[in-house]
Structures are given as structure tokens and as C-alpha cells.
Length: 154
Image (cartoon, rainbow, N blue to C red):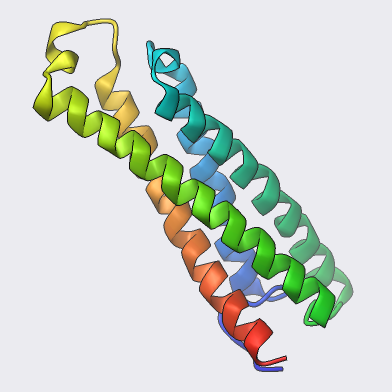
């Protein structure tokens, strides 16, 4: 099997997973600390999706650390297939949540000016959280692409 940047059990894969986990956790933290997020369904969906992303990425971080520490090979058919399915599912959910939240922010800031009218909404915090969600998704998209090519090379 080929050695690809971001492969499971490699330092580059560990760095990608840590980045995914950190950006997803930052997205949750910023959104949860913003006032008024719970009134919009897409923001609640963003928190749920990023929560799933944190759990998935953290689990794979632990697995990568174990593989690096004990020099284990994670390039088996079953493990790579599991990574592919998990990455593609979480990537789809994360992109959907980030895009729907970004769409709501466009509606709030440009179309209806709700952010200017309602002082209870933390629109700047919403935008920062959405940016973190897109950063987490971008790293996840890289991992998904790598996993796709690894499963194709098996």
C-alpha cells in the first residue's frame, strides 16, 4: 500500500486529525458562547455536526497515537474501509451544517439586516464559528480524499 500524506498511523495523519478536532471544538465553543444561537435551527445543527466531528476525530487521534507509539500498521482493508465511510459521512454532515449556517448568516446580515436590528444576536460570533466549521471541514476533506485513494489502492 502506498505511503500517502495524511495516512492513518502516520504523523501527517495525526496532524490532520488534531486540526479537525481543534477547529470543530472551537466552532462549538464559539457558537455555544454566542447569545441567541439556539433560536436558529441551522446553528443548532452546526453544533450537533461539529460535536460528531469532534468525537470522530478525537477517536482517530487516539488510534493514530496508539499506532505511532507501538508501531502498528493501520493499513488493513477493514480499518481503511471504516475510515473511508466515517470520513465521508462526517464530511457530508459538516459541509451541510457549515453551508446552511453560512446561508442563514447571509440572510441575517445582507438580506434582512437582523443583525443590526436585534442586539441580542451575536452575529460576529456566529461568523467566527462558521469559519472554524469550514476550516474543520477542509481538513476533513483532505483526509477523506486520502482515505479514498488508500482504499482504491488496496
